[in-house]
Image (cartoon, rainbow, N blue to C red):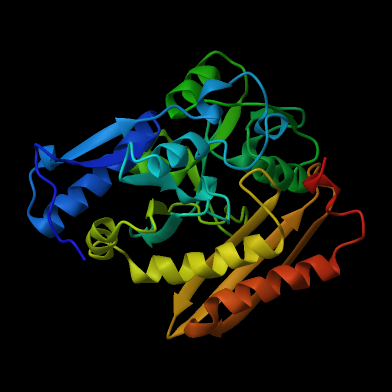
Amino acid sequence: MTRELPTPSSPLRIGTRGSPLALAQAYETRRRLGKAFDLPEDAFEVVVIKTTGDKILDRPLKEIGGKGLFTREIEDDMLSGKIDIAVHSMKDMPVEQPEGLLLETYLPREDVRDAFVSPHVAGLSELKEGDTVGTSSLRRRAQLLNRRPDLKVVEFRGNVQTRLRKLEDGVARCTFLAMAGLNRLGMAEVASSAISEDDMLPAVAQGAIGIERRADDMRAAWMLEAIHDQDTGHRLACERAYLAALDGSCETPIAGLASLSGGEIHLKAEILRPDGSEAISDAETAPLEDAARMGHELGEKLKSQAPADFFDWRTA
């Protein structure tokens, strides 16, 4: 194994999307690696890569292909050697990696909750019948309509700053963002309120940053091991096994959240029809070492409880 550290003349290249949030996550990864190995900032090069999901902003994600929209170009550049590692929002990641790539390093997880954002009202309970809500998330749309079918939901894509401008322009009365993203941007005050997990179960892996590498890059493996958070790893192993059992992605109405307590892992899970007309939920607890197995089994259990036509959205 080569343990030659990066230098300013031969930096470790960190691939990322170019949004302010994606850059903040890449800089956090750079900071942690620099601290772990006592390296200067210029021993790393942050490489911005534009993905399909970033290029097409005028259509819903489900219309342009739900899986890999924010990762494909980045992973292609890593496989070709243009970058060494890639930093991702884990809720955007498909459950299967391309051959030759590994995703096994996670930073400590941030606040998992959804943020309610509105210049007009403080929370969901204050919305009136017929109010317009903006979101690009099928999960949030389905959960909202399940609880408040009287509301109107419109497509609302773009980075945090773009969505805030749309609110100011009156496109919608409110929207949802991830508390984790707002915290990482130093913009927590943007949230009118944080929504309880009991009221809106978050997306699988929400609030987690993952770092991907080439399978044969032993230097990257050694360096990333130093910043990996084991608790987040256990939680995501459970959640992503659950997601895989449902053949889901970031663009399907699936929610799930794992938590740790006293050597055990607990998983809350929910699947919904896209129009919110039906939701199925369940929960399980298992020993920590059985995290992935339990996640898979709970996914299979929810599938068995669902009507035959419940998963039509997977091929729609």
